[in-house]
Image 1: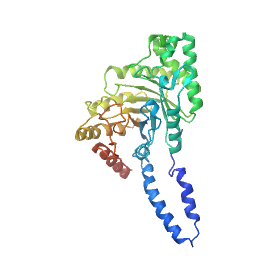
Image 2 (image 1 turned 120 degrees about the vertical axis):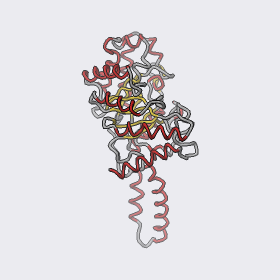
Image 3 (image 1 turned 90 degrees about the vertical axis):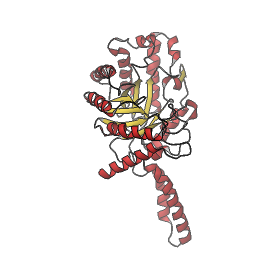
Image 4 (image 1 turned 90 degrees about the horizontal axis):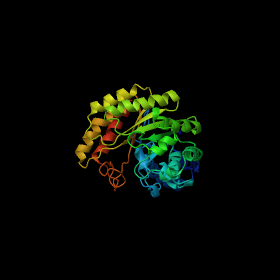
Length: 350
């Protein structure tokens, strides 16, 4: 997996050159030192991710719209130490027709992660919703559907070999593919179609790439928790699952006790848990901050939770309009101010 570095490699040459300056170049030395300090002060923001030094990551999505590429974002590495493509990695948006790939945005996000030494998570190999469907698959025979899905998985790992995590199947309950796709991959009995995807992913994934599943409306508790655990248990039996993702959409009215109880139930599986796609969609600053303060510590401090990924953080670049933490001008909403204080206090305790 991609490892964090204490000092970004791109800063080393500038520091080394500064140390080599002859002592009699006093004026140049002072000038360059002043410039370096200014540069260092600006760049040091990129080292100060909220969860830096923690045992788990705090990440966010990148490139919400397929053709935006990286969306020049000078703030991302200030806050987050893990990245997920919001749409660029979804099958139907990456392979737009059979064997026709448009990976530019995904390439850029992957390169950003490598350059900044943060883990890259793929989202996702199979998701049938929201314009991400690879509908051209429906025109193929069952054998060709299987062949094309395997080629897609192999293509991905060949192109992005340092991927840290992959959400192989997203929303198997909420947004399953059509019956034709499920039947081609083995059918519904014992979740055969899901298990087929994980066997193929395990076949091609690097040894240090963790395979996750991801689902919505689990953290709210209820019947979906048991169904999700049943599916994951089968994947555990197959030896093809490494982590469990639970989406954080639509939780604004969910009390912390429900979150705690659900996390405790999911912890029975003995797998690392991850909160994915979290946001608090509230226009009122005080309400948003209060929800963050009530919910986030429950998730972050649960021993089974090994990371949290937000589904965007900037105004105007989010699926849920009022979920942002940072305004377009770079100023922070009170919830972000609270988050920074929360992590600062935790670092003091550590």
